[in-house]
Length: 356
Ligand code: ADP
Ligand code: MG
Image (cartoon, rainbow, N blue to C red; front, side, top):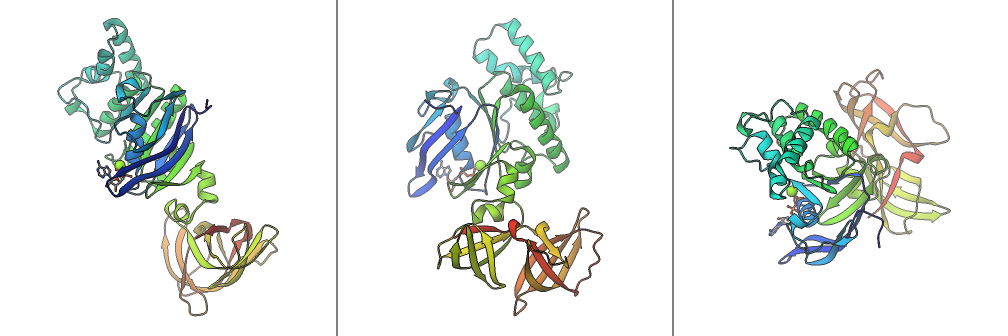
């Protein structure tokens, strides 16, 4: 009845007065790498464990592969979960850990051995089948947990902050490996993280979650460049927000009265309503020549500047009382010093209009 592999319909989870998930609707297509992104306590783990069958929703239903699985126990679902702490058996070897799910599913010994070997090859652990878990590094344990999950060939692989325990370098390497693995096996992945950079690195589709509700769903580029909500604009990367009132709106454009003056942007917000304008730091141009498609934000004084390799991260103060602080990324080669006065502009099309 639905073309999506996974669909959640009005899924709600309450713990007493606390609403952990507030009527979530979400569809996931086969083969997608989906990332649930949100701050701690936003409901990511709750959503994942509802997909995995470890938590039953208070109301609403969950469909996977054409079946209503709302009350189906984990073992009877076409899903496998990789938990944050991996939950490996420390006294067993790598091969025994990976083969465990197959043993439980009564897969014959010969086939089991073959599948374990194949999957260890897939995750780059073919030499380590005989090792014990406590003889492995963090990255290797992570691979064992993945191997143990994919060996049972689930339709959906659920991963709860699987890279959270790893050092930055290994984490970035594992992000690339995860993407590469997902492309190869074409399994649908639903991966939880609170790290927006990780989400951008790996996701086909990012689902931004805040206080038990979905704020935005889409490819990372779209979510970054055209965030659907104020929360998304500020959580997914850095953003400057100018808040004001809509004073005119017609023909697809709205004029917002901001502390930096009236700014005309694409999109509609009702006249009289509060509106937020979001501008990414790298979209702000310093001292650029005025041209038709640029909007001037006025003159500013550079108040702080830090070299960050690919760019310089600057703060600029502007507005009538110099009390508006803008974050901007400036190319390292641009001549700029703290204290300098500069004119600040942004392409009109880069300004995102957001409702309150
Ligand atoms: P996240 O994974 O995004 O950090 P969770 O899904 O774990 O968030 O939690 C969402 C909210 O639900 C939090 O406020 C959390 O305290 C609450 N919560 C989660 N599980 C339970 C539970 N078993 N009993 C009571 N409250 C819970
Ligand atoms: Mg969690």
